[in-house]
Image (tube, rainbow, N blue to C red; front, side, top):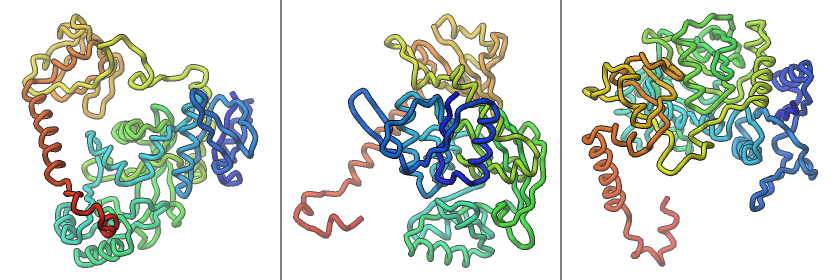
Length: 414
């Protein structure tokens, strides 16, 4: 395998370990600075240059995109994707994980534990927002902070409101988040590769510090995750579109609460703590994908007209509830279940005697019209009504621009 590690820090511990692990396994490997690429766009021929030279052929890339170069770094990864080079993490996954608000919005659709969080712009909304997450103390986070920078704990409602107002006055976007008191000063970092956790550690803050980042002196200890935490970590990474990720979770009385999903997790802390070859596990996974790549059928499969992939949720009261898959009639209707999601459990290629339950989510391939008919009429009508309401709302709120065509101040309003 010819592997490119995309990193602006070739001497940092993580980059060196990935390089060593690949070289030890007999792979050709180079560290390429993310900012030294030129992206060439021509019809039918996406291309890359590196240090003014046409880029050599690579089988795979391992992106290590720092927060300060997210925009350009994800553009480079996207170009590798267009050139059909396997990328350990997708450009979309990196972008999703880098924005705390966006990542929580994506995760909130799914039945995974996340701390109650709110995002407001108007200062009049700050006090009600704090109350909605459970009142003080609350955690206030900058959207793009890293390594614990921009994470504050406000002990009272008044101090929380003052901090949010101050940050907003400096044009900073902030999240207000419930403080999980039982997990104060500690969290779990699970290192996910593909569909498994290859290592995990607990980070414990020292002294009065409530942030458990290793860069802030936190103590680490190896931990063996139970199934709930391991499944949560893997699902979170997959939902974010990441094959290699560090998933940070709080240990709450209600189970794992996802705090952050990191697309470029560091190795030094977790390898030192667990004494595991995490870098080697990542390289082995990439090599396996190059030899036998997984395909996202929702993006890559070309099928006959009228056929495709869709996700269906079995509602309460459905005729399919309580029936085994083999007796549901789905296969006879040209609908094949690829994966069954039940709570936090993912069942690939479920057996025909598996009984369908209300709330189960089915990833199916088949006749789109017949799959559409599985959605109850009332649900389809509610969806259509929501779309109509949104369109009407957008029309009603659209400003009358005709009066401002010649007013230069109108362009500066936003």
